[in-house]
Image (cartoon, rainbow, N blue to C red; front, side):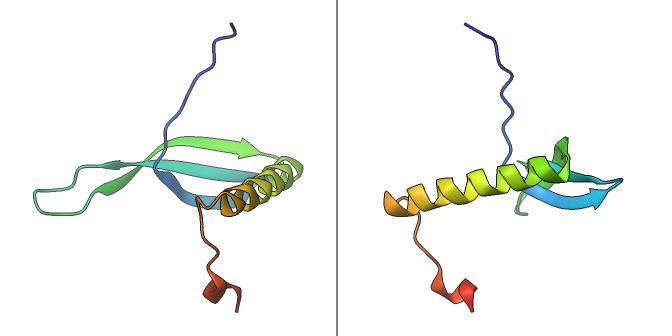
Length: 81
């Protein structure tokens, strides 16, 4: 079996376009000071060409549609205004 690296992220901290490439900075949440909320910490950056970004975006839209159909996610009609 082929070995694959797995990376966990709590979310994307920032997406930006620099030097002709789309850059995603993925973050994990680190414990804050006592009584304070967690603090996002940038751990990994993924860089891809615009064509790769569009292909990833289309794949994510398709997956969102499947998750909505399965009842895992609900549409937020207010965000479409």
